[in-house]
Length: 330
Image 1 (cartoon, helix red, strand yellow):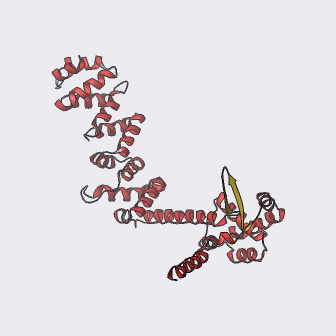
Image 2 (cartoon, helix red, strand yellow):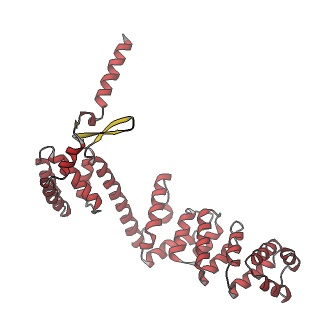
Image 3 (cartoon, rainbow, N blue to C red):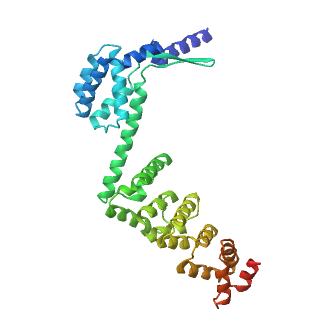
């Protein structure tokens, strides 16, 4: 008896929570295409799109709700599709309207068939489009907030980049994308927050520090980056700098060599330059004066075809580890 009662209860609950799409009317796919190409639909969408662009949401909702099915369903779908494809910036009122469309239940469905399977999907999946539009709108709002706070000098970087893992990831992603859109003054204020804090107090991720270094081009940010634990972000930035080849970039490649984990990559990059600048030569000479680096530098220079200059160094009275260099050249 109890088992039968439980079964009845579960059945009732399943019917109650059954997705409403199951109640949608099934229509052929070619009928859907005919509806989409209807001239009256196109005309009505143009009218409603004009309301949307002028932020007249009351008129928009009234006109949409007056339409009978299936026209209302098709117009709703095409309107939201145009808002998405045209990347229309939503006002707060329009965002509320679009968000309300997520809760609407599609009235029609089509059957999709494949190799051994068959399932039904909404014929006009406007809730999915509305969800994407709202997601983009929220991202736009977050971007605007970030830029305004930074420009007004009200963005505390440490606080802003704190919170749940998900929130920090979202904000880091936003910062990486939008940092170069800030004014020089706003950028400098944020950079100062970064470099003025003791490295043991707080540091954002290496990806954030790399982006600050790239956009600001400030040596003190690069100095901070090279002091951090090396990872794929700092390695990629070192590769980028080495490929640029200008004097400012090479100065940072030389600075990166002070990080033990980046030393070999930096020296390889410097040794690959043809010709070697005077600054690079002087830097490599200082490294060849160190027992731990002399062999590495000499081998890389030899590999890159700089044996002639190495011989000049050996015979020129420079304070280098000659015996180690000589061994590397054998």
